[in-house]
Length: 69
Image (cartoon, rainbow, N blue to C red):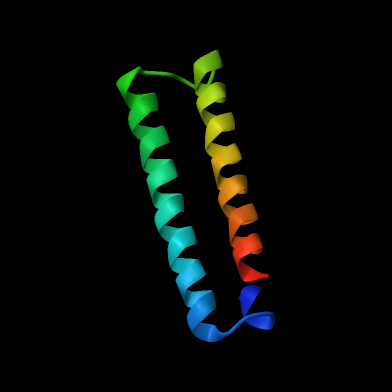
């Protein structure tokens, strides 16, 4: 919705698809790794995985902003 203020509808939809797909892949990978190693919320590695997860999401948002300008 935010991108529609700055770019065309087809381009915004394309970037939204990239966002959705990357979001799914990042979250799926984190979930798979956390389950595989049985990390709980009180384990340090769970929070390392969460930090990596959130950093990747931020990076994708940053790249989408770069592509939109």
